[in-house]
Length: 347
Image (tube, rainbow, N blue to C red; front, top):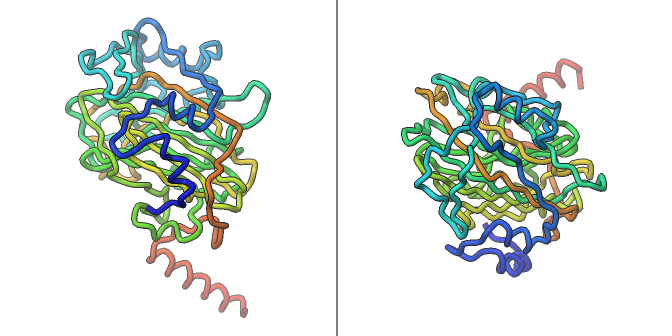
């Protein structure tokens, strides 16, 4: 997509086509001076002990509601399954300690496979994050069948901690979420539950859905099975809330793959960035998305950088509905139902 000249200039120091940029350098470029990371155990842990480790408040995962929300028994901390496959990029890493294994049982999708948790990251002075950078590494079994797609960790925020996922769309004042997804043949994207004003759904690199989230730059990068992949996601809230200047950037193996600066994440100041949304499963909402066999993904090196400052990109004032992802057939039904209701009421 086309971005304003000021955006191009300010992004020039971050990444150029094909250039590699470490997550720490991106954090410096955007003045994200506060940082944290998720602690991992020093020894492997079977499922029950892994759950206890993650949910133990003293270990610093700071879970919303204090628990893994979905399928805690699908977790374990295991030895690196690909010790001879360092992550590509500027800083190849061969972590010597355990990695987080997430299991997707055969036939599972959505709430029945993978896991979901929300790791809150709070500032020391009680202020809210309006910019956050998340970096982590993920690997998939060598025989991983991508099927039609699935979710991977990202960021979320807002006062409503249960919405903006599973078909519960945002209204601009309750929440947002921005996970990553793999699609058929390992195609990658950013997958967001965010408002869609200003004709966003008509843009060539945006795919909107009548009932679920939106796909941003699908196919701009591709995952590899049987080895480690590094993902770095930057989210900056639009500011002020009635201007669509929100920023999302995605780096795959330290190379920029996605850059969009015309987004609205919120229509009210109460929606900020809360932390890591470790949500991963196959799907999709029906059995055509399910994994045909039991497979695993593996995660390590979760790091985050943050700032209270929001986006300072230029942007257009928000026009139109805060969120109207209605596909044509659904829109027709909606209009017809409205007309029937008006006739019934005599209006």
